[in-house]
Length: 128
Image (cartoon, rainbow, N blue to C red; front, side, top):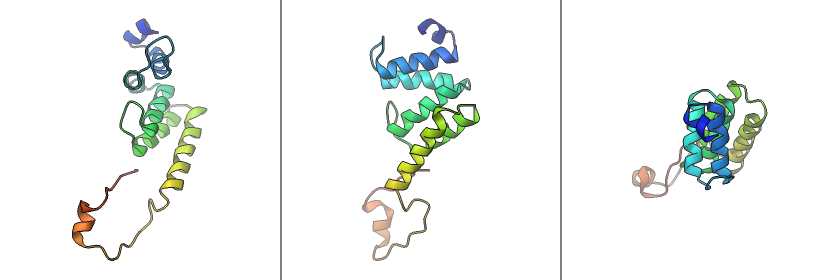
């Protein structure tokens, strides 16, 4: 796959990315897997798009971003991945619902001053 991936073959980039992710025949490297999946995704490869979404969902080789993972899963579905991406998107949404039940809800905070709301306590996270 390495030669075909170098020549820009999106399927080879996806397959080689998976090999790096799993350490099959090459040294395990999440970062290299992400690089290769990004190349395949840029060419519209649905499975590479889904794999890249999984990297963002799990923080493997990139900073974790549920928003980016969701965007990529939806894009993979639009590109024709009807096997893995829909299930991954559902799992991501279930995870967000379970661990972030107030996401998207209006919340009233009482007893906090402006300084507390402006970053002196905790960190705001965008789960998109």
